[in-house]
Length: 303
Ligand SMILES: [Zn+2]
Image 1 (cartoon, helix red, strand yellow):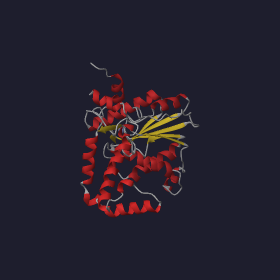
Image 2: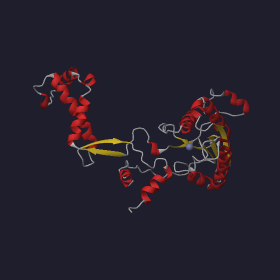
Image 3: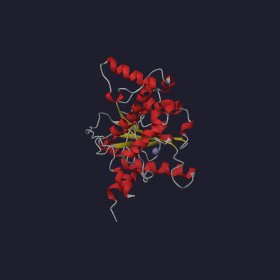
Image 4: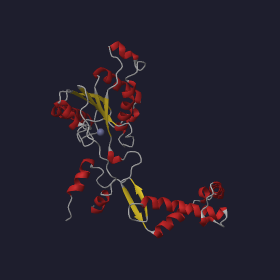
C-alpha cells in the first residue's frame, strides 16, 4: 500500500494556471451526464455558487436517468438521484435541473445527433452566457455517458450558432446562438492524451534482454536496406557513425536496432538519475475511489 502511494509522488508535474475572472453575463448552463458530475472534484459547483452570488441564473442538465447509481434498483435510483440533484442545486442556488433521462450507461447506443439536437435546443432556448460541460478531448474517459455528452455538447456548442442547423427551431421562435464562454472539465485521473504519471527504472542486464527481445522480431526489424539508406543519407551530409564503419548492412542494422531501443530507454530516464526507464500512466489500488485518492495520499501515515 505504501509502495503504491509512494509511486504516486512521481506524478507528472502540475501546471499552474492563472486565476480567471468572472466573465460578463447573467445566465449559465451546466451540461453533464449524471446527477453528481457537477458537484464532485472535477465539477463546477464552486464556480456555480460564485456566479449565483454575483446575481447569475444557473441551470443544470443531467443527461441520463442515473438508474445505475445507487443500490435501490433502477427505478428507485432514478427518482432518488433526481430528487437529490434538486437538493444539490438548491444548496448552490441554481434555478432548475433539466433531466433528459437517457438510460444510464447506455448512451453509446443513442445516435449522437439525437443528444446533440437536444443540447442545441437548450442552448437556443436558455441562451447562456457561460456553459460548463465535459471536455470533448476527454475522450479517454471510460464512462460511456461522459464520452457521449462531451462529444454531443462539443458539437452542439458550434452548431447551435448556424442557421442551417435545425431550422425548425425558428417555428418555436428560437434563433441561432453561441455562448460567449465555455468551461470544460475532464476526469484527469484517466489521463488526457499522452500523459504519464510514473516511470519505472531497470538495470543494464535488463536493458540487454529488452534489446534482445526487440531484435528477436527480425521479420519486421531486420532491414539491411534501411541501414544502407541511413548511411547514404548521412554520407550526403558528410556525416558517418564511426561504430558502423566496416560493418555490412546486415551487421549495421542489428547495431542500429539495439541502439535505437536503448536510446529510447535512456531518454526516458534522463533527469531521473537512473540509466534506463519506461514511463506509463498508472492507476493504483485506489482508482475506484477517485475522490479519496488524493486525500489518502496526504493523510495516510506509517503505522
Ligand atoms: Zn458521471
